[in-house]
Image (tube, rainbow, N blue to C red; front, side):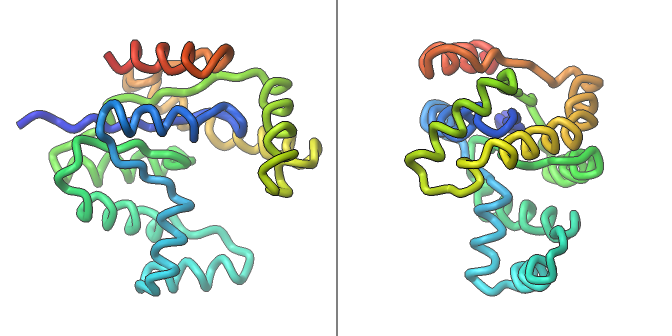
Length: 191
């Protein structure tokens, strides 16, 4: 049995993860797993995990790893015939990466690779301000908020990057240039 193609897609805010996810979903027939989408779906369906997440979030708390892992587990089981997955926004910590490895291992699977779109901070800021002018997203209109999001990304994800580097699964992708150029770089890295 051929292993699935399981990709962790990383990059700072404004790196183009959403745009490039669409390409990978179509080309490789992957299922996109975004923790934000999963949280909203579980809350809307009023599942036990969704209700737990809602209670935490309404009290201004982060959703606990075990709840997020439970949602990922549910999604993996719901799409058990998928050719693979793109993990977007997860894992954010080394503990989450280790839990994801355990979860996949129990299914006879593993993370194939982490692809990180590398974009300088000034480019991320410019892209997000441009998106903010048309998207209506308030967090994309304030440069101070954008820079804070980028700092948090850098601080929180550095251990996850090292985790995948140590496993030989990390590939940095130049996130500058045309969408087509970046897509070609990702395709080359995937093989």
